[in-house]
Length: 373
Image 1: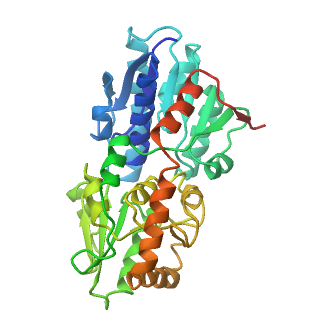
Image 2: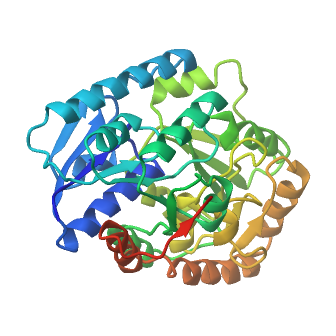
Image 3: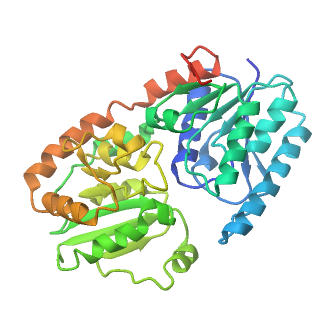
């Protein structure tokens, strides 16, 4: 098999680049021929340590949506020509597209007669015309699509393209750290609630602020919000907003394990009416640490969480129910400990070896597929 070319847009600490790093690791360990990774020039994150050569193409992520859309479209022209000019890419090298966004790589693959594999991570791309355009490109170019959950596969079928569901997995080093961590219902007398999310309204940050405002009287409960951006982006997002005294906002970190160790509960408050989580990696990571979780009622997280077993599934718009569930856990160490054990057991269903076998089957064309008409 010729060397696989990987394409990605923005490198940070979020879920999709983490999964891509695992795909590359699975390919390398499975003796697959691995070529280069092409990623946008703006952003540094987990892919810096992916272990294969990296080639960067121009991309700039602005704080303004219109500007970011424009720079994204231009970046894909740069990606296309970066691939065309790279003479080290073999004539029949497969092109692996991570997320729907790097469509320049997909067009390169199709126009040069190569196999194109999409690893789809998203559903709710905005604006809608952009989502329709990206899905149209995938339909024209893709040989096979990988989805990260059953709900994801059913929510964004791309007609005529063979599809396979491969659940994400936890990084083995991360799991080793998690296994050494002992869950505690209280840390220094406080019930610590953790949420890790991008600075986007659809991720449930406005709902988090409202929720915390209803719990201001509980001085024994503290909230930590870890975001995927730096201090300037945080200041810009929260400008004009009141940050509750119970909440501490933290910039992007490469040590999320440190936050899980201190957490007593982890939240995912994504708005199911505007954003469906395709998998919910932070939920799974929390479970590995034995931390009870609360996640949305739809999408990937609902496949990870059994309600009232590892935690609760709650629509983030239901502030009263969220309020009550948090108090139920904060005031009941026995319930938390039972859910902690169940969460850790559930996380073991998503091991890297299982993921690696499934990914390697996709790469060599042996996976079971579902075709949408």
